[in-house]
Amino acid sequence: MPEFAEKNHHACQRRAALALLLLCSGLAFASPGHAASYPVKPVRFIVPNGMGGSTDLVARSVAQKMSDSLGQQIVVDNRPGSGGILGTEIVARSAADGYTLLMGTIGNLAISPNLYKKLGYDPVRDFAPVTQLAASAYVLIVHPAVPAQSVRDFITLAKAKPGAVNYASAGSGTGSHLTMELFKSVAGIDVVHVPYKGGTPGLNDLIGGHVQAFFNGIPSTVPQVRANRLRALAVTTAQRSTALPEVPTLAEAGFAAAESTSWTALVVPAGTPRDIIGRLHREAVKALSSPETRQRLMNYGAEPVGGTPEQFSAYLKRELVKWGDVIMRSGARVN
Image (spheres, one colour):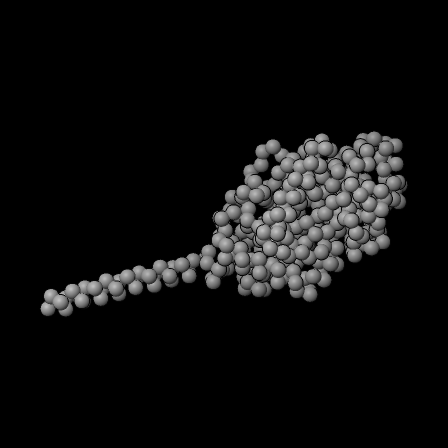
């Protein structure tokens, strides 16, 4: 009997241990942070720019396709303000569970950290890269009433009236702001910065003639140029844009040193589980590879990129150095 009791006791222990193991495994599998079950609810994709702008158009194109693959809605949440800082800080403070994504841009991840002495986030420490989404040129656009048909004309006008020409930006610290600051230092002109809460209000005021110029992203610029509401003088990339092939580059005008590329990327809060990052990466790259999304982005003048998290991490570090140098040389300040 004692031997039987002892065997029965050990059997009970084994059953209890097995039950505990199965319980723990079940809890781990059911956890929303586990890639096998992720996502179990809608995902919020914060875009720190206004609706209708270049960044927003890219975000919505990718989010729509990713929603289909993930089986959950990805809700694009526009949080413009302070050159993208407000929306970025929200994501930096969010739970690292894969349910809050950030649209990273040249402005909020590469320029603002160099431009502001105090930020509520660090672009490398507080975020984990998923993938670079797209890259495109900025376009120097002016109101049709501005007497400039070329980059050289614009420079002549600005030099003839120092401080009289105003330029819009999507906000202090954004790519559109620092691209003009770079161009100013290269061209030797004095034009006045008018920051907006996103590219769309700046674009609308340019169309209305309240400001004279804007280095805007291609996606939201093309329709306005095609409708003759605005005049495009140059693109900022080394090659002409397929969306505006008739528009010369700054290099063709003799200002290759002012080259600038607008880019977007998908990032998540630091500490997000690697398997969830892997899932998001696969779905984002799949979305970028789909003919429908690729064509839509190309129509906007945005070139799909993709790539690994490690590749974007290295690229971001190079951009931080580049724009830090630009800011130091140009003496740019936030308004």
